[in-house]
Length: 335
Image (cartoon, rainbow, N blue to C red; front, side, top):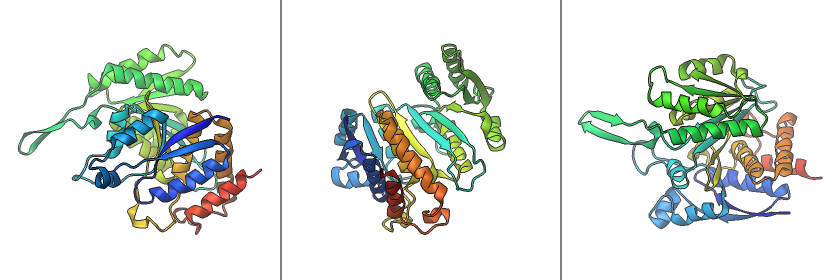
């Protein structure tokens, strides 16, 4: 059996609790993993004087894979988003967000199963802003052929690998004819290399309406950075919220698997947080390192716990702790 060394970033707030629960479940699958713990964000700023220490970046580059808990980012002041900084430092160009309804969890679309692929490095999220004159701010939207082609190819490769039949690009090329027009052109150019996969596109505002009314028409969606951020959260809402949706940021230098929700400082240290999102991200990570049997077993165990309905955390109306939830999954994994 292969041995894996994986960078572990517990994160802030509820991060250490939900990450510890996840490590228990991953280890219960029998996969041989050595965890290399690193810190980033507020803790790192206090200890190293920087939010993203070079040692953490080097660890992820060396190991190629990281599992990361949620981080706190100050709003409007303080340090800039560590998540954005990490993506830039490692060129994690593809943000992948599977959206799949869980058994026994009330939601709008119990059969929903789609994937959002978001370009992670440019558009308005490049953060290129300046004050033109007092009271007037300019923010630059950067779209390049290189990044647009790369993310389109990732989306089609993902569809092919996961046996999905359709990829939809979402854009606003009717208004932003040059920037979104370039993104759309690159998408259709790449689509020619995947004749077995249906390629279509939708204007972003119409796409959002369609997602609320008939989301089953979508399989894989590919979007530029800002649209992708908004739509992936919208889709998480369709299955019950961010606490149930996994995420990954993937590039050529490595991949970081993380829960996309916040650090919930108001409930930190109480042992009541729902670790589902980070656990599902860890199952994505297991597939990424080609431990498919372990990923399938762990995911089935979690789905069985949800289907039973006896062990639920407070956010879903139950009274179970974070550790109780992990224990129930570990119990299901026993031969």
